[in-house]
Length: 278
Image (cartoon, rainbow, N blue to C red; front, side, top):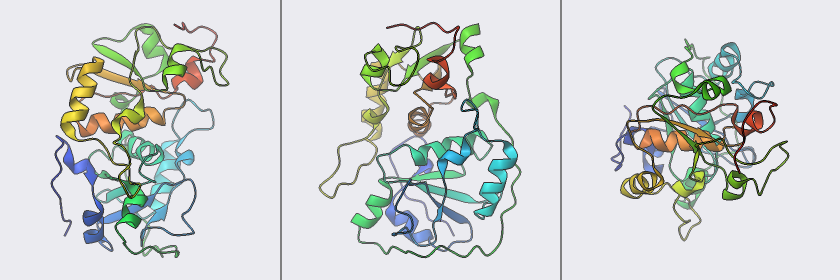
């Protein structure tokens, strides 16, 4: 049986701690996904399966990988329709939240959870790690359905968004255009407010573990930035990894309508007919 812990967020079920993961190790109802870019073979949570978040992106850059591709990737990891998925990275990154977002887009809403503090929280707690790749007992069976109420396109923005707020979660320098990176244009989309993605993370504790800020702090921070729960919130960044992180945080806080701009600045900042503000 899955054990639940109590967390002080409206959607507390989306975030679990080390004790929860330990209590559910080996459960046939739970699949652990290690989304770290490196380090899996050197050690991971026992039973965790590595997932490359980059495989969830279409090579065209501005869309997700196809439903068939995502379905195959998840089924090969043992994920079925009723599976609870727990995904982690190092705790201070954007890879686990990217996986979280794409899986929710494809219909696994409320089935996916994040490990607060990630792998570093696990090792800091002195828990067992493994270098062995788990043997998959059986392949999963999934029915995926894309939810277009969880995504925003360039056309949506250019045609005008109703009751919506564009939220630029890049660095302040990217937002102002001071840091153009490799884009043809620097700056931000007209009307977008700025709130950097990593502001949602608390400072590392004495063991180096980075966790999400508490509910009241996050609620106050986003309200001060101008976010309102009744609005459709449209986060974006460079490639919608940082935007996906903010998607998760807003879901955790109970925002009911969050639709990241998947193309983000990678598309907007390099397209011929997009308006840029500096």
